[in-house]
Length: 405
Image (cartoon, rainbow, N blue to C red; front, side):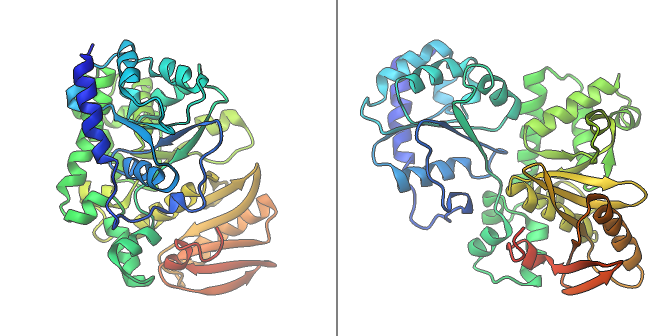
């Protein structure tokens, strides 16, 4: 429970924060974005990726009188569901829209949001835990909300922020530095090291009562060091001497809920096989990888693959990898139809040509597609093999949307 006077003091102070400096980078997420009429808008994503800034940009672009409240304010520590009544009394009744930051910190928050929505209010909320949001959204708010995933800076946003031009050189910088705004401002890797620790030790370990935090941290670092590789629950259980494969499953589920890591399934028309087959691991940001591991100073290939994965995920495609006799890195579905097949390789040469094209050609035959793509560091070319076309696309072109994917 929190005193109404403390809630009011925090609320009034926070309204000053809503004002946005004019030099803040406009996020690509907002290009063409228009608030829906009656739906609750839910902005999700990893901590410190810019969700709060997106909120402020939405306010500046679409509204004049709003109510904003951040539930991570230390002055309202202990805020409970019954305290929403006090907050409701503090917020101006004439507000055009309500913005609530990190609302999942309050248990049963959806009760108040449902009540506010039933009154006809326009509501925006943010959260950095997928399960906590999904559970409540899927019970009392089903059909009343739209979800939008927010990421750290994309490559085009990175270029604007750094005032750079699209090129192989700027791409190399992006592959190493990623797109967390605070890290790009400071250049201090401790920013991302502390963020990773906060997520693992506070958001996951404390919330789920994990006593063996060292195992959880070791698994997180291991996965960050093995981007683009397959992982299984049993392999992790044996490697880290966990009690059961279920424990490994829980750890990976919670890491994905926090948006720190993603796990890409192998394609199969069988739902059961999709569930049991190994998954490939990717990270939310390349800077998060390089700041927390030692294995990527020379291995740009996997950093490039991670950047391609994030570009595809930003487009809200349904993604898989393909593996039968050979492997294809990305199978891209749009509206339940396979639209694109992509392979990622730093350079196509005499040593890599057969390996990269054979996996892609096998996938093209399987999905009956006549065209495929290989994303390279800087090569542009068109190959005609077995009656099919394979386009080699430089990564700085692809990550800028230059081929329409």
